[in-house]
Image 1: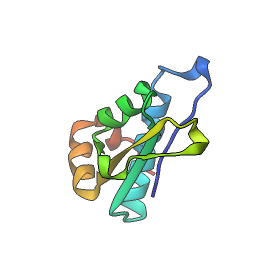
Image 2 (image 1 turned 60 degrees about the vertical axis):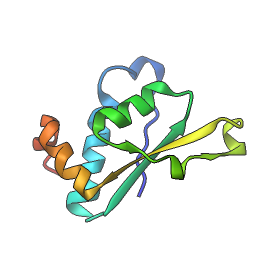
Image 3 (image 1 turned 60 degrees about the horizontal axis):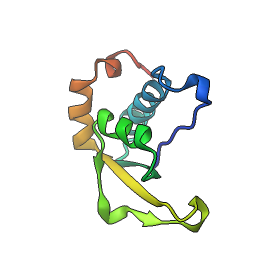
Image 4 (image 1 turned 90 degrees about the horizontal axis):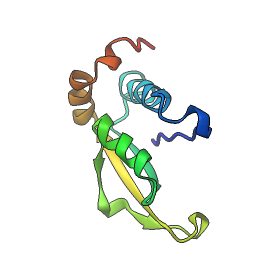
Length: 100
């Protein structure tokens, strides 16, 4: 399972991606019983991989790859397992109010 986000420039930096990502993680782990969720972005997109880290996702260089579709820029992959999700729920108060 994969989560991702793309926002218009006037919507960036307002917490929308974080809120949506937490809701997606909640749904993936609490409703769909996923064992793992990944997220990927090009290496140069520091705001996206920064958010992945803030969410508690971990980089997994074994899954990084180069895609011709992304202008030959390396794609980096971050992972959250169900074990990570239990930790994320404790550190992100937002997860208590999602209630999907």
